[in-house]
Image (cartoon, rainbow, N blue to C red):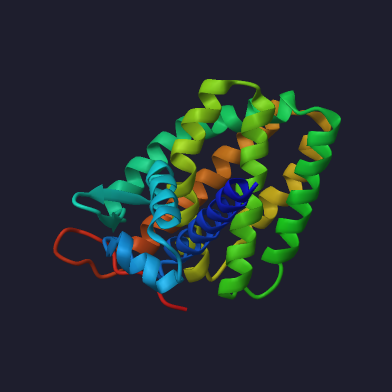
Length: 238
């Protein structure tokens, strides 16, 4: 019984460490290219090494952290080239996630997709401070993960999840710097009814339009930022 309590405590601690570190990475509080150690993270979070090690392993699987032995880690660099490469893959993968998820969603999933879209639109309609951006990204992650699950294609789900962390970090950066989110708002309004109809073709078109607009915003934002010696973009502050 005591062993189970210890394991439950460790699992909860590793989840908490993962969420805190991931949020800091997504908002660039932990900057692209920044170095970390297990011990430093454990001290800052007030946790033991095992849960922090588990959290960092998950962040590596998300593509947000790179391992550099012994026991050192680096926040995955963010460069104009790496973001361009990411969008090139996303433009190929994303339409399938959107199409298969929209057409494959059962009534319960379609209702949840619609609810998440409405909730996301409400956040975008207000002033985009950091808190709203983080909440919007959380909703967007849940929406696309549900689309991936609704596709019922295990390989697609696996590949999507391997890229998702990096993609949502870039979108977070764009939204923190954004002066306008008209393209995302327009897409959300259109997508709202698309889920109810299971309209894969419309979902694909919307996804491609939003991806193109988002890529253009990302290149503009990152192209205007100073870079350090290895090409890592200095993060935005807001």
